[in-house]
Image (cartoon, rainbow, N blue to C red):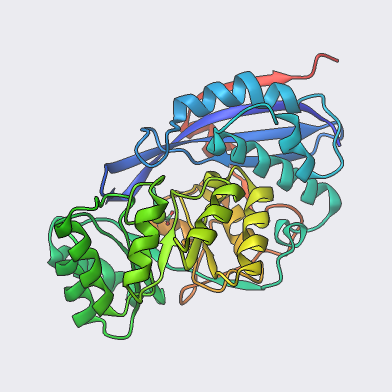
Amino acid sequence: MRVIHASLHLVRLPLVHRFRTSSHAKDHLDHILVRLTDESGATGWGEIASASDPFYSPETVDTCWLVAERYLLPSVVGARWDDPAEVAGLWAKVRGHQFAKAGVDIAAWTLWALSGGVSLATALGGTRASVVAGVSLGIEPTVDDLLVEVGKHVDAGYPRVKLKIAPGWDVEPVRAVRAAFPDLMLHVDANGAYGESDDEVRALRALDGYGLSMIEQPFAPRNLLAHAALQRDIETPVCLDESIDTLDDLRTAVVLGALKVLNIKVSRLGGLGPAVAAHDLAAEHEIPVWCGGMHEFGVGRAANVALSSLPGFTLPSDVSASDKYYERDVVTPPITAAAGVVEVPTGPGLGHTVDEDFLASATVRSAEIAADS
Ligand code: OSB
Ligand code: MG
């Protein structure tokens, strides 16, 4: 396989509902779509799902654009490779910048699957025909507003709800949601907002009494020791998200006892290849995994669905339908869920077509990189 042309498309979509986490609030998102074209004219799409600001990860849309345009795509365009797992080797000297790498990696996988006539899920080793989706709900202005949001998604059939928490917005909303929905599979995600003060650790320990399926990333990303200490004190599994950017991070966290559950995000790990490797390593240690999201547009969302079809993804993934976030998605058909279940496409490649006319109308900026000969 030889990619002879690549393009980047900065695309803006409005969100149907304002999303607030411990660090920020968003009304629209800008993601970068990556298109790779091979010698036969076949195209593979990927998505760089970085946030605009460096609050979840150090990367931003602007750093991703710079790194993809200056380093990643020039190393891929013109190079020969047989397997998408080799593509990361083309940019091996580039440290970090996982989100930027992930977008190009996804495009290479979708192009390869399409050319081989297999679905992306099959190319990755997926075994499930459908995946169970959960929803991630942001911090709401009031507990009553939150209860309305939870009710809406429970009514839509989603079997698992995750709530964003932050110091001061934790025990009270969790108690209210648990009282209203006693049997709901519920978990919380702090995005690293807690410190190790007595008050903040006490609040986290208090959450142990609400039958949560996990507490996700309570402490800062590099603070594995605090996660290990909390996990020793509580029954609820600690799940790591921001702490795990590489397989080395995962190995260290396992040795320290810093997690019982892993959130696998394609973007955070730098692509589908490393995401599959993290799935395999977690399985060796009997750590259940699920696929986290970054409010992906349809391209990244379809890649998350394909990944979630691997056997170790035994917990519901953040792969809710496109319409939870966007009025109109960049792919047709959009990703849909019925009673909280998303079917895994069986057609070649991504299984969804990029709507190029709509994409053009929502594109803010683009760039092209072509092979010299
Ligand atoms: O921590 O999982 C997170 C969105 C932006 C940044 C971080 C996170 C999230 C989500 C979104 O929870 C989940 C989704 O895409 O449905
Ligand atoms: Mg998270």
